[in-house]
Length: 438
Image (cartoon, rainbow, N blue to C red; front, side, top):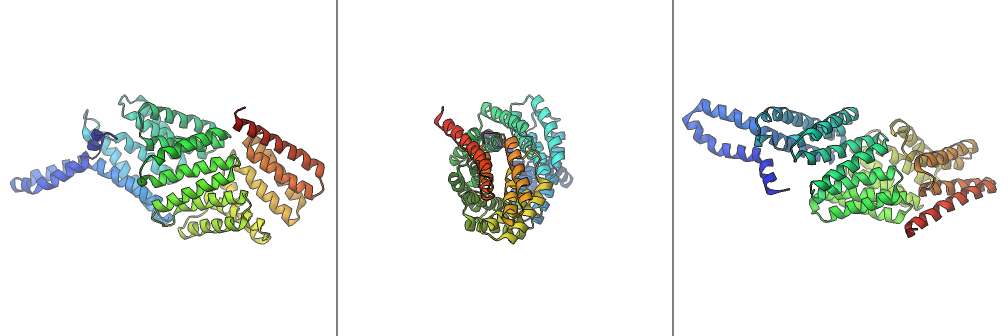
């Protein structure tokens, strides 16, 4: 950020500070005049101060238990909407310095809609704001347009519309590059692009972009621990998609370390997500005891902080059930896997590739319980969804093929098992050639 931008951004605070110093002198000459100037100074300073308070409330909310979080977000939304309302009047005066960052405050309104789970309202708001910002001739609007596209990409991604999310993310990144962004902005955009590439099955691209994201944040200071942690988190997921589970585990542990540093070692939702992802990678490595510890840690944080039914909690239940299953504790496995499945059935987008993994876990559960019919049904769904949602050359599909083949062999269907192993080997060979650049 340039020095001129810093000055303009804090002009509200500067004006208020100067007025507080001069006010006693002015009051000596004219009481009514002093009150009139009070109103003018407060009006002009309000957008900057309210915007700052909103950003602070957003930050506090991210670190808070569920009840406090919602209160912070609601208060932040009220502050930001009030700031935007005042901005509308200040913008009537051309070149009014007190309206500086008005577009940024508009973007912040949509951010609060999003974190308050008002997804439809947030999406509609951002879509409208994108049109407004594209029509704005102020060069400074481009940066806000890039941010708006990024946030809209996240919402579309959450709905399972990965192609649209990818397009929006790439548009945002292109704008950021043209406006000579700082590394923080570029890193944030690359982090989101990593996630959208993953869901598209573009594994090499997601890893490449994820590495670029962490490099951006590695160049910044420790005040950005939380953003850097998210970048490492997404890179860990990209490595997991590629079947590189040890690399995924290393990145997830780095993410957890950064998240704890950002929160002064206090548990919060972000820390719980890190534990969930570590558990996930450990499960692929068949380290069930360690995965059980991580899954329990995640659920303890979510329960203590008051977070109810959600995708992250559903995944924690699923990981806990998978861990118990690997340890042969079938009753605990069944209770937690079914709880996770019921929650995800309500919350997970129909196009989410994670449906394949969920059905695989349920298949292994019913196989362990001796229910051949249900096991075969879920194994079949895992394969069908894997082929449809992951693509025919995806490493996780190879993993599903091998797990199903193992079960088929155990149930004396060796010829069918051999077919699936051959398909898994084809995927491995294809992936090996890609890595060699052939």
